[in-house]
Image (cartoon, rainbow, N blue to C red; front, side):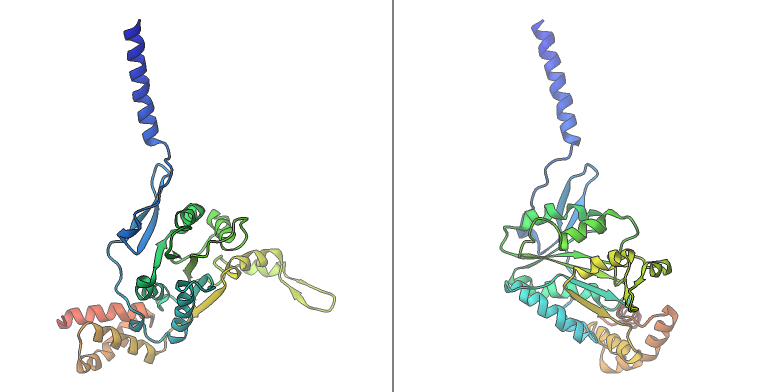
Length: 291
């Protein structure tokens, strides 16, 4: 009888061990010494973790041309943040390929020695952001939570979660965390012609946004700093091409010779963005054998 009971216990313990292995486990903070940049990932078993970024982009602030106004604003805000002064959450919006994401990466490189850290999180995982903030709340470093290409469709849950995180949750925001987000949409949600039907007018003819419009504006309004990016002119595009070619080792004569092909490249791509300039420079430098 005792042997049968002990055998049953061993089998039960084995079953429990297997069940515990697949159950969600408490998330744990990482070893912060491994990197200055991290990605949040949620596994299939529901466990979220921060993974260190091993290979960082080497962009510097001086590498980014023709966006001096935008650069000055985000650099000033980031410098206030790392010095422990009041600073704002930032929303960078506008034309594609104009340096929004690159500017955030360059700020990390510029200020990581002063304690700046970056945590990249996908919009699908924004509901887990309170857990991430708990991990970093007592850390001496300053953390930028980075959401790239942020936009929402109607009814997505991350929209509500981000609103409460930015401003609206009963918990106070920790002073060592800011949210920096990039988007091609100013209000982060799709805008439709029918939304205009919700506008109302007062007796004296004053126009008031309806609830639909107010809801779509409310999220972007919670970012304290809006930085807009615009399409580049031809001269600005060529200046960026020249900068990238120079950084790849091309001399002045080679850069001058590349101007006409660079314009053809932009015409074929239908865009004169910084991203297109970089892609052309890589192609041209590679074909020209520039080391």
